[in-house]
Image 1 (tube, protein in one colour):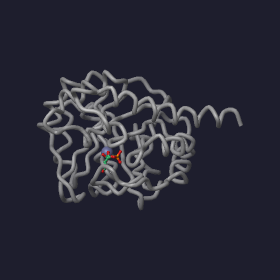
Image 2 (spheres, rainbow, N blue to C red):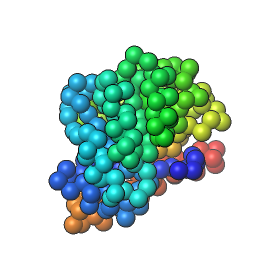
Image 3 (cartoon, protein in one colour):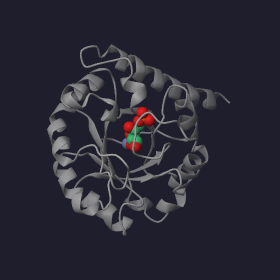
Image 4 (spheres, rainbow, N blue to C red):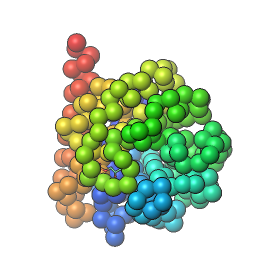
Length: 234
Ligand code: DX5
Ligand code: ZN
């Protein structure tokens, strides 16, 4: 997992066919995605339940690239080892998911995974100011977590603040929620490099007809990269 700030598209399997996760992961990778984003929800930290480490372990052999696990669970510490053993490459926790963010991030790295922090729309960029050297990724939520298909909330000012706070550190800025060809340029121009997209990737396709996944991935990538080209030309 070499570090680059190139645009990476990370489909969220929250919008996939839950009875076909293995094939869905293979299909989105074959159609050109960069990472696979896996949303874990506990019905407590967020008002929805998805699945846990056993499902992550079951889909792991169907993912060749990066398995990006987004934990919307609290407390998170008792479960970090199980998600690492399930094969997560990146484990992202929410800033509010435990009493000691610094300790949780150390634990994720000690388990051999990349460590991420997700910031809800109401959580300020300053929440990570004192843990920057323990971080590999910051996930800026552009919806309130819990459901796919919600409307994009513009967090450009927060993304720009994080980009400047991060400086030369090898920390990805990931965007999660409401990403589409219409909103990708906004977040790319602000400094994001990993774009999570659920509904905008899976719409129109199925495991039997995955070509629309590829069209959707290319449309989001082109929109994001177009914004960067336009900015460089200014
Ligand atoms: C929201 C999840 C997202 C979600 C994104 O709680 O973390 O990953 O699936 O879905 P879309 O792209 O449909 O907004
Ligand atoms: Zn997510």
